Length: 418
Image (cartoon, rainbow, N blue to C red; front, top):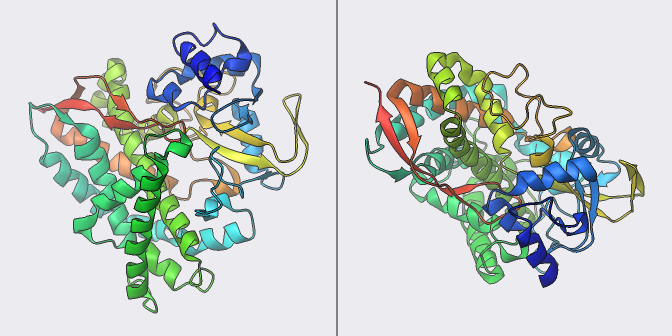
């Protein structure tokens, strides 16, 4: 194992320089150094359905082309989510199942219990709340001073949104960020957090949310925007096992936090890396509508989803055996030149910007996709009202994960409109 890891480390600078059998994009160092695109470009070109015999997660298949990924994602009858959505194997003594890692019918029942929170009527209620909060956050930023955009803006806006969705005590909202980070940074997934510390944080999360559950049992949510009340009072979920409750909490927290917050940070970075696109945006703010899905494509905040074959399946000329696990690399499919025009380019006025994989396909397509887009749209509308430029003044720091493509630090200076 150590030899494979060291060889893959040497491939970070030139993924074409090592034997294909040694090219494993599941190592967190690949993403922490932002080296992944060369890995996937080679896999798409030479072996788009590629079997990795040796990785930190054991053997698995890399699915790297857009259409192959979409085919697997839509085929829940032959490719199961039940063993989990990450390459990390579930721990028998600490299993936290959730509806995205379930197959029908249980998946459908649990997802339906909470989907109403992002119904159009509730999105309409949330829009003025999000806009007001975005304005307040932006008005509090230090002008002309360097600060971390991730912490001051990306995390703060998304954490406030999560607190609203859970009707969570607002003064404790940063606990949601902490639990989200702990859930996705465990050492078993290649992250920096020791497993005992991760488990302790998850049990702390469960204890806190169990108190909220008990307080809300028998009380229907007043405004239809309270995920805890929805689960506590729905006949299909009110008898949920505590560890299943925890699993669904983590799913909703990570889905509402990591994905949106890293797209907020990524958007600032991409506009700085592409000043022609920033100038285009400032000249025509109406382009925010098409820029938002382009940010989400270009960022791809969750790099992959795992599936497990329920039977032998032929894909891309290869035979995937029953029981094999696959990584559908969304981050690769979103750069597939056979499907997306100029996929390496960040273009804010694409003709069909929603043609991407970041939200998935099929029964597991992200239920909060419109909410995520709305948060980004409203934030950028408020940014353009206030600032001539959000300038990146240092190198971004990326998180140690092959599942979450995220940032821990993005140093910026904001320049007000003259």
